[in-house]
Image 1 (spheres, rainbow, N blue to C red):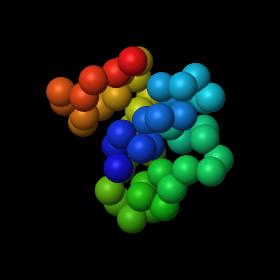
Image 2 (cartoon, one colour; image 1 turned 90 degrees about the vertical axis):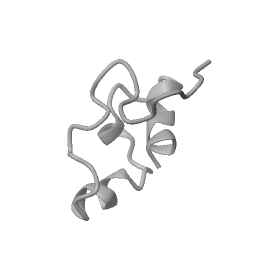
Image 3 (cartoon, rainbow, N blue to C red; image 1 turned 120 degrees about the horizontal axis):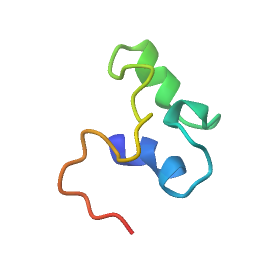
Length: 53
Protein backbone atom coordinates (compact mmCIF):
# COMPACT_ATOMS: atom_id res chain seq x y z
CA UNK A 1 0.00 0.00 0.00
CA UNK A 2 2.89 2.36 0.67
CA UNK A 3 3.97 2.16 -2.96
CA UNK A 4 0.43 2.89 -4.18
CA UNK A 5 -0.01 5.80 -1.81
CA UNK A 6 3.35 7.25 -2.82
CA UNK A 7 2.69 7.19 -6.60
CA UNK A 8 0.94 10.61 -6.83
CA UNK A 9 3.99 12.19 -5.16
CA UNK A 10 6.39 10.22 -7.32
CA UNK A 11 4.67 11.45 -10.46
CA UNK A 12 4.53 15.03 -9.13
CA UNK A 13 0.75 15.26 -8.98
CA UNK A 14 0.94 16.46 -5.36
CA UNK A 15 3.67 17.46 -2.92
CA UNK A 16 2.42 15.27 -0.06
CA UNK A 17 0.58 11.93 0.01
CA UNK A 18 -2.28 13.38 2.05
CA UNK A 19 -2.96 16.00 -0.65
CA UNK A 20 -4.10 13.53 -3.32
CA UNK A 21 -7.91 13.61 -3.15
CA UNK A 22 -8.61 10.25 -4.81
CA UNK A 23 -6.33 8.21 -2.58
CA UNK A 24 -7.41 5.64 -0.02
CA UNK A 25 -4.69 7.09 2.20
CA UNK A 26 -7.11 9.00 4.47
CA UNK A 27 -9.07 5.80 5.11
CA UNK A 28 -5.85 4.08 6.25
CA UNK A 29 -4.98 7.07 8.46
CA UNK A 30 -8.44 6.88 10.06
CA UNK A 31 -7.90 3.14 10.68
CA UNK A 32 -4.59 3.89 12.41
CA UNK A 33 -2.38 2.24 9.79
CA UNK A 34 -0.57 5.44 8.79
CA UNK A 35 0.43 8.65 10.51
CA UNK A 36 -1.34 11.62 8.87
CA UNK A 37 2.04 13.13 7.93
CA UNK A 38 3.39 9.94 6.35
CA UNK A 39 4.92 10.65 2.97
CA UNK A 40 5.76 14.25 3.67
CA UNK A 41 9.41 13.56 2.91
CA UNK A 42 11.40 13.57 -0.31
CA UNK A 43 11.71 9.78 -0.41
CA UNK A 44 9.03 7.20 0.10
CA UNK A 45 9.15 5.89 3.68
CA UNK A 46 8.73 2.21 4.50
CA UNK A 47 9.51 0.96 0.99
CA UNK A 48 13.09 -0.21 1.29
CA UNK A 49 14.64 -1.66 -1.83
CA UNK A 50 12.04 -0.19 -4.18
CA UNK A 51 13.37 0.88 -7.54
CA UNK A 52 12.23 4.38 -8.49
CA UNK A 53 12.35 5.89 -11.95
